[in-house]
Image (tube, rainbow, N blue to C red):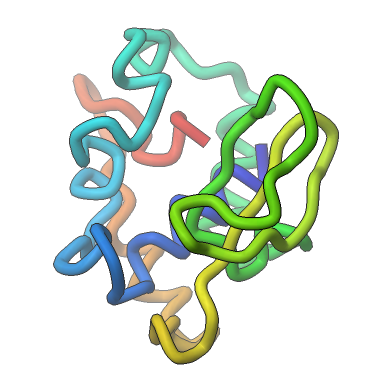
Length: 134
């Protein structure tokens, strides 16, 4: 869950590829075809306490390899391809492959952005906790 959350936060912090203009958690979550949980509807289920704690850790800046700077991940049926949409493989974690762009392709903000990311997480009655998809 932390790794998926890392990818989500990285997508907000990046400014490349099809992620240009994403600046909020809702923009990232509801970007067309981006989050499988939204597409299949299980994003809207009530999150468990454990999921909320993991999401909060991600929003507070916890990063773990191989998703520390990754912008994409997926679960292949076999081995991880060395590139996915022309992005290099970082590593496989369990059944998922993680990919990150090269330094020339993107700019990811510094860790000082953690406070601004925390402010982007909508919470409250009637709204899904922004990082429940992680």
